[in-house]
Image (cartoon, rainbow, N blue to C red; front, top):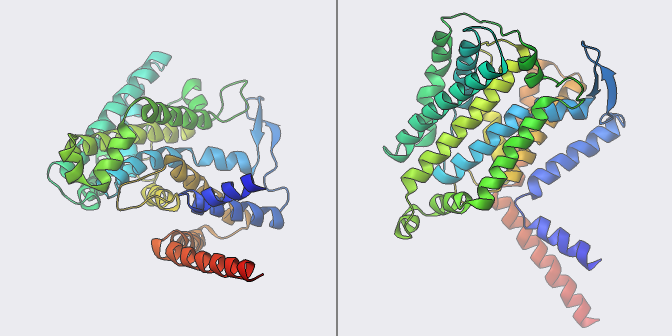
Length: 356
């Protein structure tokens, strides 16, 4: 019993409280509304291979690009105290480069690897451009990334000469859907791989500590021998790599590039995932797992609304209401209020026990 109380106390003071509550409420709501909502079953796809289907798989699969972008956005937010609103445009550029390389000749495993490397380098270069504006020229992140947000999709359009070429390859199809003989969608494995890379970075380097230090107090970080400019720049470059991965997944899902619609408006969901994850949008301390849970919560909310047959034109309005409630729940003012209320209740309980 004591261990349960200790666990609850830790969760209450943790950044993961709000995202965990959000997911729990959505799970309970869906189980009440439809007990079979999270059921998973095996079905044959177009190739006749058995694959897992169901809302749970759709949520895990559909949130892949958002989760990857939320990881990178968390790092940028923690280091710079601002957000990159050009991640969707950067992903479109990366996807366009990927398709451009594949369209140059026969599509083989080597060509796909070359395309991925090229789109990563290009996306990281654009990330470095945004990072330079923020870290070197000290422009507010949202304003600095507004440049690429405005012109990024036009750049993606020019890369392929205004065309929307298709890339027909079983390997590309497997990246966006299923590997033959594997019933789990490939994007889920890609998310796990990206998460593992971040975990190894934080485990074997001081990237997480340095990022938090710069976000909390740049002057103190500089006095302790850190280079805030380099750390901010690195955060934007890493986010660029995340954009490339998300762009490749999105292109592979449809086997074509659509510059106008590829991950359109995903930047807003990525920022919200960071906020719902309990991370301060002003920078400093962060928890990557919170952003990941926040991203899945947003996707679960979207899937729930569609399952309830809410018109697509109204989905954004419903999402906005729910997300506002979640963000307010996680705000410092609300946390402080409930903290004081909890302290008063404890004091009264202790007083009654003492008199008894």
